[in-house]
Amino acid sequence: MARFHAVVANSAHFSARSGDILLDAALSSGIDLPHDCRAGRCGTCLMRVCQGRTFGGESRQHGMIYACQARVFSDLTLEYDVLPPVRRVEARVTRLLKLTHDVVELTIAPAGRLPILPGQYCRFIFKGFPARSFSPTAPLDRPPAGRSFRLNVKRLRGGRVSPNFGRLIKVGHPLKVEGPFGSAFLRRGKIGRLVLVAGGTGFAPMWAVADAALRENSQRPMILIAGVRNLKSLYMWPALRRVARLPNVSVIATAEEEQAGHPAILKGRPNDHLPELTTSDIVYAAGAPDMVDSVAEAAETARAAFYCDPFEASGHTDEDSGWRNVLSWIGAA
Ligand code: FES
Image (cartoon, rainbow, N blue to C red; front, side, top):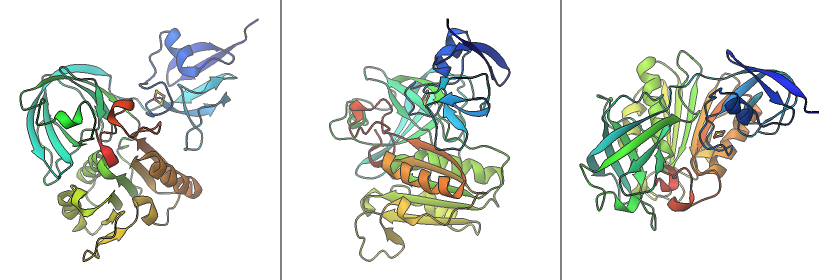
């Protein structure tokens, strides 16, 4: 006979059979826990186990699990961040700007409100094209204004969506935006040093977090590490320059290829240049999964809080093969 366990998640109560996937048990009881990919990749279903025991789905953060992967094996008390509700709104492309040879910036005006926390991502369904996920970011060269979404996207050779920005997808193109999703968002009201690590267009969510954190508290200590393959792809330079003059912010720019004549650009990947981490640090990473894993390991060793956005969590390097278009990062969609 099946054994049932009592589960409390924030203020919601439901029961789950022993061995059930936590998220499935919640959804089948009518409890809409936050989720998106249901595959342990996006982090939207991240929750803290306050009491009880689960099996599987452990995240890199101590005591945190992915509800879509964890199985219930005892009564449970869980806590999770309350996220803005998922909505779908009509929208239109209002601007396209080439930032580098391979990164384009899109401005998208939604027809309705779609609240999103800095660092979260949404799904963008351009009319006539498959859905892609991107993290809205802040303007690189000035403070944000209005409610338009700004995306920094890498054109992926062979992709079905990103190569069409500026070609089949132009200003005025209609789309739907659905979201928000993801757990690598800024937790407001904290004072710990922020260590933000971005590879390629993984800079998009990290910059959204940095910008919002500094608008909340301009004195907050922060280390912002941005890496690219070579100088030609350093599209985020205006943003780095903007914050580098703040005494509380350290900026580290890295390039995988040797950049002769540019001593300010360190050779290597962002994770090669991490500072010494402490337990009071709050660390974020976005970009290629192996880079994110390396940062996760360092954060875990230091017992620092860690949030991540591994854009392409299943090893995809092609836009069309990823559930979450690697929008940003080495390949941002
Ligand atoms: S829904 Fe669980 S990680 Fe995405």
